[in-house]
Image 1 (cartoon, rainbow, N blue to C red):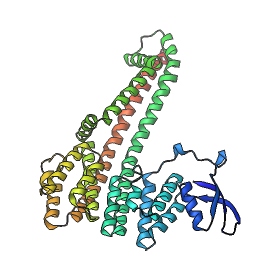
Image 2 (image 1 turned 180 degrees about the vertical axis):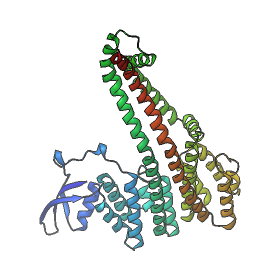
Image 3 (image 1 turned 135 degrees about the vertical axis):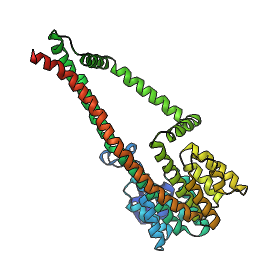
Image 4 (image 1 turned 120 degrees about the horizontal axis):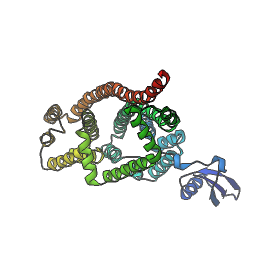
Amino acid sequence: MKLNYQARTKKGEIHTGQVEASSKEAAINLLQKHGLYVTFLEEAIPPIYAQRVKFFETISKKDVVLFSRQLAIMFKSKVPLVESLKVLSSQTGNFDFKEKIIKISEEVEGGTSLSQAMARYPKIFSPFYIAMVKSGEVSGKLSEVLNYLADHLERDYHLMNKARGALLYPSLIVFVVLLVMGLLVFFVIPQLTGVLESGGQTLPVLTRVVIGVATFLRNWGWLLVLTFIVFLFFCFRYYQSDRGKKYFDSFFLRIPMVGGLLKMVSLTRFAENLSTLIAGGLPIAQALETVADIIGNVSYKEIIIKARDEVRKGEPVSAILNRRPELFPPVFIQMVLVGEKTGTLDATLMNIVDFYQKEIDRSIDNILSVLEPVLIVVLGVIVAGLMLSILMPLYRMIAI
């Protein structure tokens, strides 16, 4: 925040100006370091046209990725941590994120560890992120850990963008077709219904069905929309419950083609997160506990938590994963077993990640190659049916 201040020097000279800090206490401490003793301090209120609309301002994953990469580079270049954070705060375009980085730098400067300062913002920094930073602080490898984190976040960001991009074109097709159908149902068909019925001829079955459906949608369409919204609301509420999330997560994994893709995404996240945590110096049981909190899918979370408990008793990870072959394929388990025997589990897991990332790209391309023509054909048939139902009686009238 920006604050207007009035202060005196040791000689009694009056200074006024503006200072930027996370709080009034921080501003006072900052001014005192420059030999100024505050007599007046208040938050600077910008004019209405310059005020930010915080409601629309969010900290995206891309902001965190850029922050992590830049912090890793600066820390590797031997720039002090506090100075690195201050530089990054001045370069960040997102004002909300900028404020958070300033607060973190002030807490670190006051003696708080970086992981503890970041842990106060769980909506920005995940438990995985905090655990990695903490392991780097304990092991003295914070520079390497920050590089691991930056690489991991960039791969995860790329994966999410790939999935969103894959859905963009099919969504656009559906939207355009629904728009065309809406125009036909609410504007074109009502205008033609009177003309067709005034001809005195028997209308084709298809035309009567289309006119009946269009009439129903104009009269009761709002009820269908309301019912659909209520249905989605209850599905969402049910999904938020433990029982509902478990059911939906298991159901999605059984959907043809989509289920296989979701399994590969979960396996990639599991392998990459576990590899990064182990490489960062965390004990495998603690690493499994952290991965379980961020894996997302309940089916995988349950087996990972069980693996954590069994590992603490001396059981190898591969033996526990082998009990759920529907979630962990034999190739995955075999590579984990090799990694455990050779003591290179982190490197072996990253090999798995590289393999599955390529498979995910292929699967997305395969799904799109099937989905796009199917959507075009199905939606084309629907639109063609609507047009045919209108043109058939018109053609008969012209022929007569």
